[in-house]
Image (tube, rainbow, N blue to C red):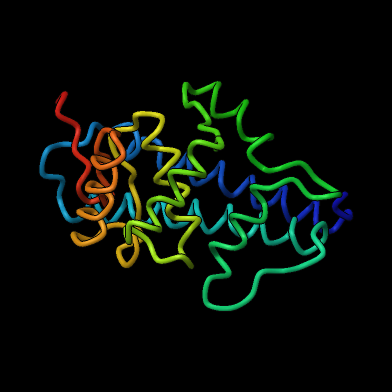
Length: 193
């Protein structure tokens, strides 16, 4: 259980996230056009970054009090997300708490399965991912096996690059799966407008 001071900080972070969403509601509700302006992309990027940073601060506070080990090093961000995604002795996995909220807005939570873990290992073996990026391979494997059209990522080094895309698509074809695309938020456009 979080102590009272940490609870207050988490509540304040949630209130700030709510305020961010309220103040950005017009921007977020505006349909995306085929060629959004630089200003719109910059504004959306700022909202997304601010939202993610707020969530990350909440996860850091939770992990600092409830988990025995704190992520460190170059990949601490990834390790923190992986850590809070798994249940710990003092808390459930964060996805158990987020799933009902996502379901309420029509967003399913895709679950990792033995098949997706096996496919992630195949993606590593086929060279689509280096072994140290197995978590990225797991993400793509879950999306692939759930027939997701694309994974949207800011990770330009390990996911959103042409070499990685080709390797992932080749592995999908060789294993009899539909190809998945990995795109940046800049590549997303709404064709319904």
